[in-house]
Length: 403
Image 1 (cartoon, rainbow, N blue to C red):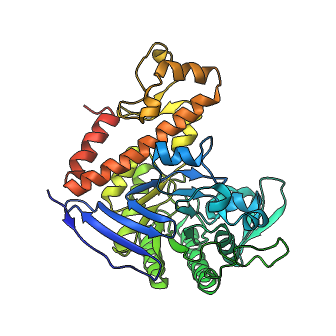
Image 2: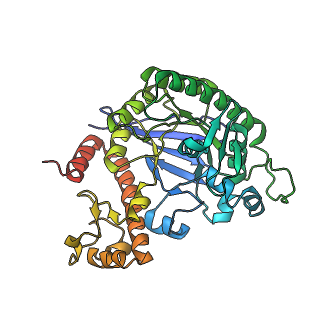
Image 3: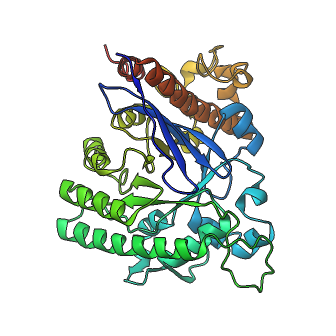
């Protein structure tokens, strides 16, 4: 079935998101998201650089081997270390890290969720004991936006509360109401301050500035597993108005069918002319299923985290390189891995991993990220050619070893 080429107008003075192709038998689509540091083809996967760069890898490797178009930085961690004074003095996160392509920063809300036993949520924000030295820290919507403005990311996420799974409907509703109020505060701060551009400040100077006056801001749909709350959240965020929209509160312990339902209960109520982002997931089959449901952007620590434990993604499913079956295996990790990795055999990488050599972790990380980014590229090509459904089904059948 042939896909149709469609166009959407720029949605703000800074943002240009154009949708190019959409298949009539699914909601899968291709597009281009323009940012201050470059254009991003969608669907896209964003490698996670918690401390400002992806673990064990260099910016050049992310560009030359992985072909990453955008990476994700962690607001909470970068705020604690190295801190805003260092980021200011070094000209923002792009200059500090030498990464000259787009960066998305999360708001810190997910880290607050992970510190459930050490936090107190109020209308003002969240007070918690940070994981470095236990010091009391208060994170508010305004401070989250200020940190992200200082980092100078291309896309900033609003500060939200991520409810746990499972949770009662009343808790989810109250949490959603708080997230919506915080969303309004985030947008107000962004409108009043994010355009201010003071590239060089002394540590004693006021912290209010942005190293990227073209920063975009994305809303985050919450609502746990409740369909009516997901719809309510999406509608309220659209009324407030953001440059893009994420679906949050997924991949927090819920079964996969609930994860898919959360997407299905939110995406239909989000604007077609703005990017949609599923936060914190997932496996290759999950991403293809969500692309079919109209999702444009993904991030996940999985490719690099599992690499450090010896797992590699292949077209025939994941493999554990430490297994004895690969002791004499001369094949590369995958038939379509990057040429710079393809010359290394499974046997040699297994030897390195068992010997605790850092090179094994780097090769596995590079390979896994290359696998994810290649999957996104292949998905885009399949959407453009009108073969996405068959591409998805063929990939999943082989990857999941289905008869």
